[in-house]
Image 1: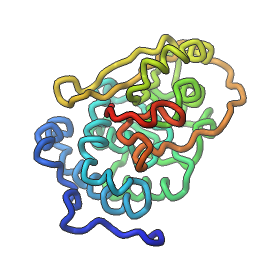
Image 2: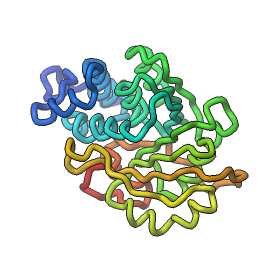
Image 3: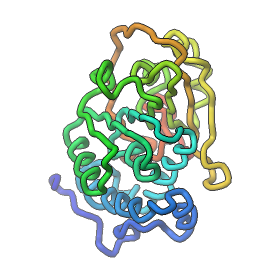
Image 4: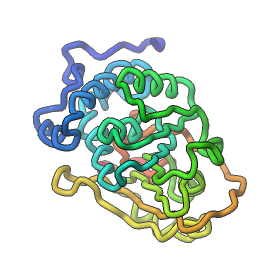
Length: 268
């Protein structure tokens, strides 16, 4: 246990992993027969995830609203049986959430930090997610591996769209898609970075809203189809490894990453 850290109280509002009453019905609809598995993951996040510094303590009571349901609704954009690479998985958002909601998906979680990959590996084993693989590394470490050429690449609150496309599009097959969970900065990022995305082989970024009629506001996703393969070029700073659920970093996919909407109060 980290110095000075303590586990949430057993009688705390989220210690049992169950969703609050105001979102319980939506959670059951989103996860269906896998709801109990989602509860088990929520319990891991609000206990071990907090103790190990993957989830900010203030996020624990709102883990369902701002993290689990927010990520799970993105599955409506993913075809049946697709291969998915989740870049900067952090605490498993959205990668493990998608695996819980959609057992048909083959998912690779890519995360460079050892303490996070340890948590992810333990969570995958405890939840029995046999179609999930955890890879310790950065996005460019995975290019050319068996996990590359994916149908879908996901990322949540990792970086601005230009850098994100540079890291993620090489992991998708031609015709595959990057689904970037964003927030209030999404439209501005599209306007600012569409030319860079095109140079990287991506089509025009399109803003999508997931979970319409279920959650308010819906989850904001920027979708980019990989139209052509582009020879990789040396990238700039390495990705910061997806800390979407850390306190103050736009938890719940509300941030575009460093320097991109970090102070937003909007979910999505």
